[in-house]
Image 1 (tube, rainbow, N blue to C red):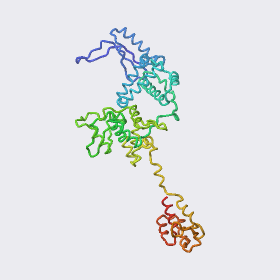
Image 2 (cartoon, rainbow, N blue to C red):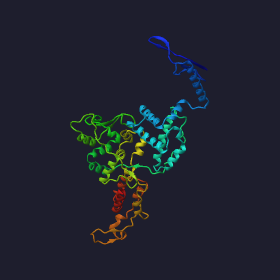
Image 3 (spheres, rainbow, N blue to C red):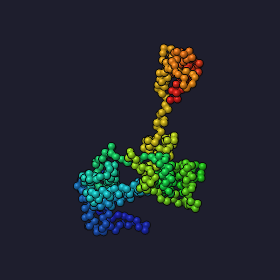
Image 4 (cartoon, rainbow, N blue to C red):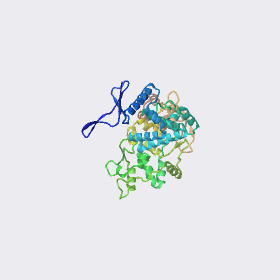
Amino acid sequence: MIFKVEKRRCRKNGAVCLTRNYYLRYRFGEMLVDRWHSLGVTDKQVAEKKAQEFRREKEQEAAGILEPKVTRSAAARPLGEHLEDYVADLEKRNRAGRNGRGGRQLKMRVTALLKGCNWNIAFNVTADSFIAWRSRQKQSARTLNHYLQAMVSFLNWMERMGRIKGNPLKFVGKIDDRGKSKRVRRAFTDEELRRLVAGSGPRGIIYLVAARTGLRQDELRHLIWEDVQLDTEVPQVRVRIACSKNKKEEYVPLIPEVVEKLKSHRLANHSPSDLVFANVPQARTLKTDCEKNGIAYCDESGRYADFHALRYTWATFLQRHGIAQRFAMKLLRHSDIKLTSKVYTDETQLPIYEAVKGLPRLMGYTQIRAQISGAEGQNGSLRVVRGGENSPSEATDNQPSSREMTVPVARWQNAVREGFESSVAVHILAQPCISQHIIRHAVFTQCA
C-alpha cells in the first residue's frame, strides 16, 4: 500500500516545478498503478488530515460500510435531474428515436411515474410503491407495461453509471396482455380509399401517397421536393436517414398514378428544400374525413382505419395483385418478411375463395354415372317424341325411333371408370351410338 502526501511535479514555461497545492498519492488493495487525489490545500498539516479522512472513507467503502461517493452524491440529487442526464445521453448516442421522439415519450412516462408515486430521490423508488400505483390505474395492460419498461431502462442506466447500487424495479413482472383487447388495424378497401381521396380536399393526395407508397406519417411530414424524383426513368422517392425508422436511406418506387398526382400538386416555382406536404393530417383529422365520406373508422370487428392503416392498405394491395412477397417486403422496407405477410396484410381482403373454388373435383363424374342405369348401360329416362312442343312424351322402350338411346354405352362407362380426361370423354361422346341426352348431361357436369 502506498499513502503519501506531496506536491506534484509539473512543467511551466519549459521548466519543471512543483504544484502549489498538495496531493495524495495512493495505491490500495489490488490497484496496479498509483493514483493521485487533489487535496486542494497548501498547508501540509491540513492536507494530511484530509488525506486521513479520504483513507478512512475508502476503507469503509471497501468493507461495505459506506456506499461509493458517486452513489452518495447521486442519492442527494432529485431524480428529475438524473432523467435530464439520461435523455441527453440517449440523444448523444443517437438512441432517442426519430427526431428525438422516443426520448421525449420516455421522459413523459417517467415524469408521470415520479409524480404519481411521489418519487423525489432514488431512495424513494421501491417495487411496492410502483405496484400500488399500477393497481390504481385504468390504462390498458400494454400501456402500463410501457410505463414499467421506461422506468426500468432509466434505472438500469443509473445503475450502470454508478448512481444507484441496484435497480429496485428489476424483478417487477409485466402484466400478461394475452387475450386483452388491443388496437387492431385494417386496410381500406379500394372503394373506401377512392371516396377518402376524392372527398378530403387537399388532404386527399396525402392519403393517396401514403396508401400507394407505404410512407409513414412522420416520413411524409419531413418529405421535401429534393427527395422526390418524378422525371427520371424510375420515378421514386427517397426516405432520408433523419426520418427513417430503421436509420437507413432507402428509395421507394412510385406508381404512375402517384407520379401524375404529385406533378399536378407541385408548384411551378417550388424550391428543392420546400416541404411536399405543408400539413400532414393528424389521426383525429383522418377520423373526421372518414366519417364525412361514409367510411367506418372502427368497423364491426373493432378494427381501426387510422393513418397507419394506409400502410396496411399498401401491403394488402400488393398482395391482392400478385406482387411477390420479397418485392413487397422491399417496398415496405421491412427487415422480416413475416412482418409483411402476417402483420401488415389484411387477410379479409384477399381473394381466398376465388383461389380455391377452381380446384379439381374429387368426384367429378359422379352425377354422370348416376344417370346411367341397367346392366348394359341403358338410360332409363323418358324421351320426348320429335314433333312439336305439344307432342306427348312416351317411354323409350316402346318406340322404335328411340333405339339410339338404348344402344349399350359400355365404352362411356369404361372411360369414366378409368378416369380419362375431358378430351378422351369427348372422343367417346362423338361416337354415333351415344345418346344426345348423355352428351348434354356430360357437358353440363363438366362445366359445373
